Image (cartoon, rainbow, N blue to C red; front, side, top):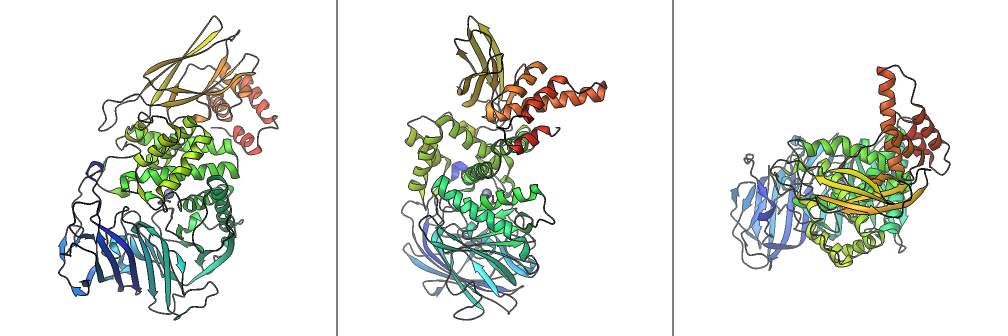
Length: 610
Ligand code: SER
Ligand code: ZN
């Protein structure tokens, strides 16, 4: 089959698939260059669909046979797959195809990596394994039987619970067969299969309701000593998701496999996460502190997808941020809890400014939820992941922690087992808070980084902040509407005492003024505390004010930002004019370093030069 010419797909054109799948049985007869895949699928008409034409995706598949209710059926090869005539009633589909894992260098579908079989199906890799409606809104229960070609594949894994494969290495009914059953309906992009000569680093976790889960990290022989850290990170993630989001793990086993050849960092396949080796293996001899933190965060991210991505998935790939923005947000909360909250926030903002802001200002600028694409693989971007997470953070800032928790409970309750949209997500917040989030939705549809400009005014005991917002045109969006921008602000008096703790101003118009009365002396504002919105901030702020904020601000983010700007100016001055470091900067730094209430990681970061 030849590659189809690039075709633009539009969000507005979405229609449901004409059929519902109750269950899928797959048999793999593994062979490096000629693997046979036998599928048995039960289809029934989808009452919510009007179009019942029968199209299944398929790419680079060698047809062996196809049957409907036991009778051979003629297949029509069409762009990207096959069509067949089927009854307008429930029927059984049975097909056999041959694929060549060894020749699969795109690393999508089933491929070989250093002698082991491995899969990557997100976003559209499953269609390279067998004919299937390879779209995330088709969710089904899978049973997978794996038959190995030789005895160099002692470990054979798939999603769900292993029925005939035991962790002590014994197998029934036959040594070269393994069977996995996944009771949770899932889309095909979460399918996974791994087979090879692997060793397991094992452990167990007891969930909040007292169920024991077998945990394993599978690696190539010789890498066994690099798994301990990842295993601890996994157990911490499982516990954190129970404690903070009330989410319990839902299978008898959870497996991670380290693979050397992998397109992405890692992948959240149900019960069988596959990782690029560099994102899971660590040893004190060869890994830096940064490596450990990154591994912990990626393990958490993939694990958290079990609820935000797998149990509740995306209706179509336009909704990618539904699972990715939320899961990035959750893994950031986890890292903040495990390590230093201010340092995590600062690291994330630095990354956002370095990667997402340029994306938003360039020719590839796109909304957090795009409205069209040609190739979904090009949309795994900083905008969808990182800005998507910022949008969740803003939502939480606007509704408050308690309302966020309530909305998330409702989300899990209402949408478990469904393939959802951003509209569903927003609706949950509207229903649980009685707030109209119509304008907030612009964060999902409008691309570009808004600019917030601040002007200050002080008269008769009243301090006023005049805020305005604007957004430059981006590709396809020449006119921008004002967005809801949560601007967290605190006020300090001239002795450095906080006279107004953090308050969230909701900037909703192009220009808006916020007044604060009863200030006998002119206060000093600390604006956009905690980087409360992914915007650029324009304010008139001189060196004296920066030194003041560095010494006195109670907000660790703005304190760091003030120090960073001062350090930059001071460094430039010492290079250009050979001056000594600015005395105010050094004083400010001293007050941070001597403040024992601040955590050591944060104080160390403050010392770093930009
Ligand atoms: N779904 C994968 C992840 O974000 C792709 O990288 O973890
Ligand atoms: Zn993810």
